[in-house]
Each structure stands twice: as structure tokens, then as C-alpha cells.
Amino acid sequence: MKLKIGIPKGSLQDATFSLFKRAGWNFRMSSGRSYHPSVDDQEIEPLLMRPQEIPRYVEGGILDAGLTGKDWIEDNGSDIVEVAELTYSKVTRNPIRVVIAVANDAPVQSVKDLEGKRIATEYVRLTERYLAQHGVTASVEFSWGACEIKVPTLVDAIVVNTETGSSLRAHNLRIVETMQISTTRLIASHAAWADAAKRAKLENMAMLLRGALNADELVGLKMNAPRAGLDAVNAILPALRRPTVSPLSDPDWVAVEIIVEEAIVRDLLPALKRAGAEGLVEYPLNKVVH
Image 1 (cartoon, rainbow, N blue to C red):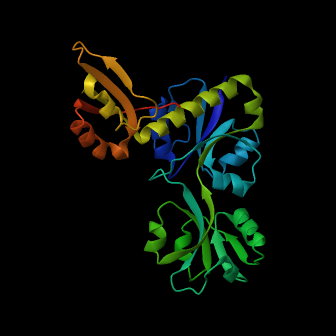
Image 2 (image 1 turned 30 degrees about the vertical axis):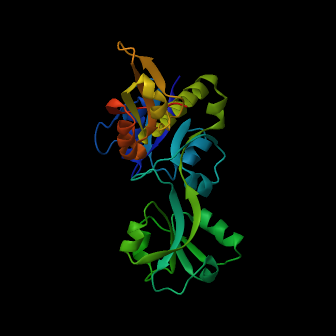
Image 3 (image 1 turned 135 degrees about the horizontal axis):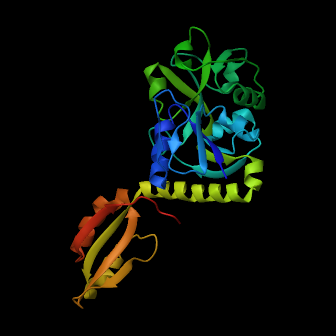
């Protein structure tokens, strides 16, 4: 069994390889110009390609599966199986937004103000549907990227995806409306999903990829606590489940282990110390499977 999977080339490539590595797969590039990375799993046949195209090739069965954005699935109108939502992007864990943007000094305040205007975008079909939903007629032209430099000299507005908005601000542009919130999806063709072996492989992959993402924001904590003060320590712990408590050679002490959000550790450790815990150790996690 070979699972042909499309890996997004470009801004998501490094983040995707990193996520797969944490999930247990090591992808390697033979050269910077290669479109055929190697992977330490003989059942996977990866191909690097633009995320814009992955939904079409998955729908057509040329690829069994792929990782691409919900925005590109919608823009292509592809009939595929969404196996898993994977909330990661090139810089942050935040979803990306597909937005309408104009020059800072433009009079445009809403999509209604784009009547009769010219818009540049990679999201031609998505934009045309959005305009139609709002009863707006405008000229939508395809752009090969770098849309920001086209406003206002060449076009009145652009539709682009943004993660932080920094590129738009750098080009003196402002967001008028958000058309869509998008996250990365693991998708499959209907034929691959109907194949028992490929479906099992995809379900396992989804579980491990989600586990790696879950672990990004979590850490493990170990500590020793006096048995007499265990209730005070437990009252502080916001564990995913009840903490693991194990006896020590000293009957008056126990070992306590939990998983917590990394963001709260800076406040949690001093509170645990004051509650009587000792030997506190924080350690990173690779995967957390719920």
C-alpha cells in the first residue's frame, strides 16, 4: 500500500515538516529544488506542491491525500473528505484570515463600497461568490501573488490571506472585511477513504498529528508532596485528568505528576512550592493523544 500525499510547498512547508517530525515522520529534501521529499515510511509517497492545487488533485484521485487550507478547498469547490482540522500556520498557531484590504486612505468601508471596482486576488472563485452573496458587481482579476503592491495604482482592493496582518500594514493597507477564517486540513479522496488500508493509515496519521499539536501548548510537571499536604497541592492543580500520585520510599511523601498548559506554569510553580511541593520538574511533551 502506498499513500500518495500532497505536502504544501511554500510558506507552510517548514511548519508542516516540523509537525510531521513531532508526530513521528522525518521528511528530508534531496535538494532545495526537489519536489519529491523522502520520508522514513515506505507506505507514504510525498509530493511537494502548491496548497492551492492540492484539493483539485485529491478530488481527482491523482493524490490520495494532502494538507491544504480550508480556504483553498472552498475556492476550488472540491468534493473531498476532510479527515482532520490541524490548527497551525507558518508563524503561529492562529488560523489565517482571508480578507478584503484597501489603501488606508480609500473611502471603502464595506464590501458594498466595492461596486464597480477592480479587485486582485488568488481567490477568484471565493471572491466572486462573496461579492454575489452581498449583491456587489465588481471586476475580479487573478493575481500571481504580491497583491499588496497593486493597491491603489493597479486595483482598488485585494483579497489575500493574512496571519498577523503585518504585511498589509507595511504596505499602508487596512482590512475592510474578513471573508473567511481558515485552518489547515488533512484531506483525502473518496476513493482513498473507501480503501480500508489507506483509511487506517490516514486515521493513524490524523491522530498523531493532532497529538503533536496538542503537545505544543502543554508540559508535564513532576513533584514530590507531603502526604499530609496532598489535598492542598491537588487543589492548585488544573490537570487534564486527576494527577498521578505514586508512593515514595518515605511513607510521608508521594510523587505527583500532571500535564498542564505551559502558559500557566509561571504562576503555578510558585503556588505549588508554597503549598509544600518540592523537587518540581517541568518537562516538554512530544505528543498528547486525547
